[in-house]
Structures are given as C-alpha cells and as structure tokens.
Length: 301
Image (tube, rainbow, N blue to C red; front, top):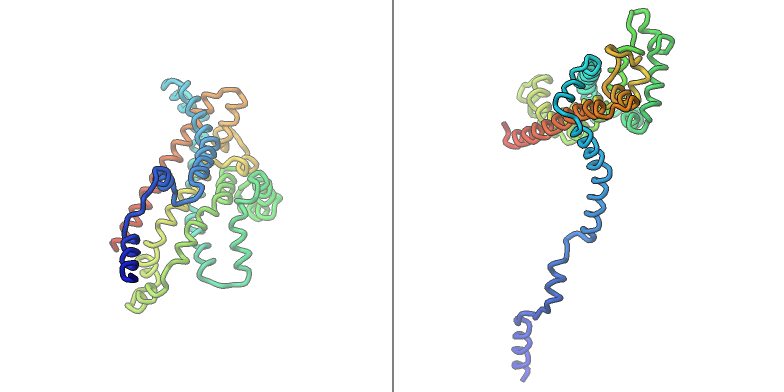
C-alpha cells in the first residue's frame, strides 16, 4: 500500500504542469528588469525633448536654406574668420589639455602627496563653475593689471582681449575631459608589466612608449576629442576675455548669437549646423578609433 502511494506521488511530480492561457500571457510579459516599460518611456521622452527636438528645429531651419544660400553664408569673410579663430584656438587648447591632462592624471594616480584630494576635486571645478564667472575670473587674472597679466606685460605678452585669451578660456573649461578620461586607465595599469620591462633592461621612456602608452591611447583619444568638441562650442568664458573683435577675436558661437539678434535665423542655423556636423563627425571618428584600439590591444598587436 505504501509503495503504491509512493509510486503515485512520483508520477504526479513527473507529470507536466497544466497552464492556463492567462499564465502563458503573464510569463511572456514578464521582463527581466522590473519597470522596464516605464523607464524606457521616460528615457525616450527625455531624449526627445532635450536632444531630438532641438536638433530637429535646427534641421528645419537648415532646410529653409538652398545650397546657394548656405554657401553664401559660409563663404562670408566674417564667418570664415570666426571659424578660423575658433578652430585654431580649440586645436591649441586641445593639445595643451592632452599633454598636461595626461601629466596631471598621472600625478594624481601614481604619487601620494599632501593635498592630492583637494587637487583632484579642483579638476572638476570648471564643470561646477558658471562659464561667465570663469570668464570674469580669467580676465581679472590675465588683464594687464591682473596677477598673471602684470607679469606677462613686461615680456610683451597680452593674454586678455586677444587670441591667446581664447585659448586660455577654452583650456580652462575643457581640461576636466582630458583628465577624467585618462585617470581610470592609469588606475587599471598593472605595475608588474612595467617592472618586467625594467627587469629586461628597458629604459623608462621605452617602458612608457611600449607598455604604458598603448593602454592609455583610448583614454587620451577620448579626452582630447571631447576637449576639442567642448572648446568649439564654448561661449560664456570666451566672450569675456576674447575682446570679440570681428575678423580677429570673434568666435563662431558669438557670431551665431549676433545673427540671432539680427533675426537672421537661416544664417545662424547654417553656422550652427556646420559646427554640429564637425562635432558629430569627430565623435564618430573617436568611437571608431577607440574600438579599433581596444581590439588591437586585446589581440596583443
């Protein structure tokens, strides 16, 4: 009797469990992430309102221009001068941030010293400081009567109200990108690899060039690229220290605002669209290059 009861229980355990249609629907609707539908909807709505709609508005303004009108706006001498001033200053600021950003990130990670935490926090100051306040502070420092400007004036160097002032402002506002992109990669470096290279007779420069630099290249590329894109669109800090002289120290962002004040929306859209296209192309190129560098590093070549 007991054996028959045990066999009956085993048969029940092995029998497939019957499911109602409602149970099947609930199982299909079950998501691995709770609230996925709600969070996805909020995310899409946020991106649409904050990113896609402004871009669509810019695209709509550009659509009002014919090719000849666009070329007329972009071939204007003042527009070309503003683009030249902006791009050249952004290139120099990016080069400075690439070199000193790597050095600063290396010091913050590798060398313990008093005040390191404070210095690390100061790196993010340009993110928290309003750009207009940064511009006023830079003018106070680099004007002829300022602390730094008074030291540079006897040497014949004028920073405030000149092209160099634009470079300084762009460097200040974009340096966190260069430092923060490289810093995590330095933290992940394996000191044993550097020690092994030294044991094999490699000099410090050979160790840095063959072991350290290839692992840091994705971060350097990302940091300098973001720094350049940030510098292209900088406005608040630059206009206070640049002087804003047409054909000399007038940046593209200021020219866009001037065209808007003149109610010349198509011209403003043409300049802004060009700047946006340059930034997008650069970001895509950075992502492609970064992916290739990671794959190359994983293959060990």
